[in-house]
Amino acid sequence: MKRKILWLVLAAVLFALAGCGGGSDRPVLETTIESDLNVDGDIFEPLNGDPRTVTQGATVLVGVTGTGEYRGFLSFPLNAIPLDAFIHSATLTFTLVPPTDDIPLEMELVSFQPTGLLPSFYQEGLTVYASSLYTLPAPNAFNQVSFNVTSLMREAQRRGFNDLQLRILENRDFTVQGLVEFSESNATPPKLVVVYD
Image 1 (cartoon, rainbow, N blue to C red):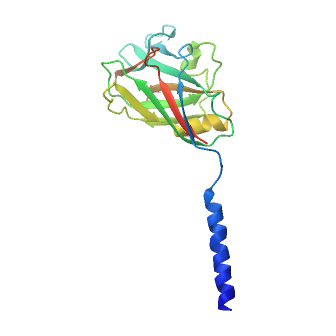
Image 2 (cartoon, rainbow, N blue to C red):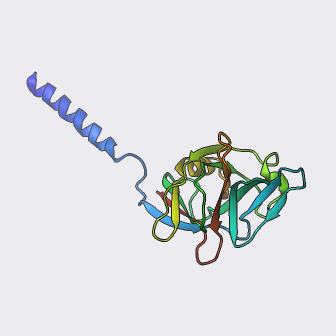
Image 3 (cartoon, helix red, strand yellow):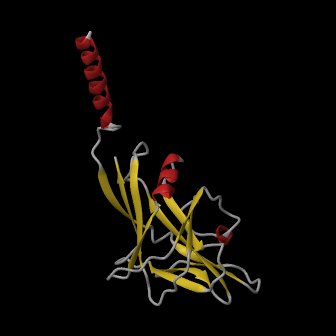
C-alpha cells in the first residue's frame, strides 16, 4: 500500500513539473522600435477659442500654458512583432529638451491612420482604448526618461493594431501649468523597447 501511495505522489510531482515550462517554446526576444517621425507631432488648443493647430517638427510638446494646452502624439510601427507574441514588457524612452517642467502625464492608447494628424485628434476625433498615468522621472545623464507602457502595448497587441499610437497629455486631474518637450530628431527619436516571445 505504501509503495502504491509513493508511486502516486511521484506521478503527481512529475506531472506538476512537466507543466512548469509555462507556454511558448519560442525564445524571448528584444526589439527596439523608433517612432515614426513623419506621424509624430502635437496639437495645440488655444484658450481664446481660436482653431487648434497641428505641428510636426523637431520636437513634440505636452502640457498646459497660460494660452492653451498641447497634446503630443507618437506612433510606433509594430510589424516586427508577431500578432501572436506574448509581450513580457514594453518601455518607452524619449529625450527631453530642456528646460522641462515636472508635470504629471497621461498616456492614452489610440488608433488612427498614419497619414497625418488632424485637429480633432486633440479630443473628440479618437477613441481611447486604454490609458496609464505617470510622473515624470528624473532624466539620466543623456537627458532621457523612460516609462513602462507594457499594459498599453499588450492592449494594442490584443486588438491587432498595426501601430502603437499614443496621445500624451497632462494628467486631467491636475491644473498646473508646465511643458514637457521631447526630441524628434533622427539622432534622438522616441524609442519603444519590447521584450516578447
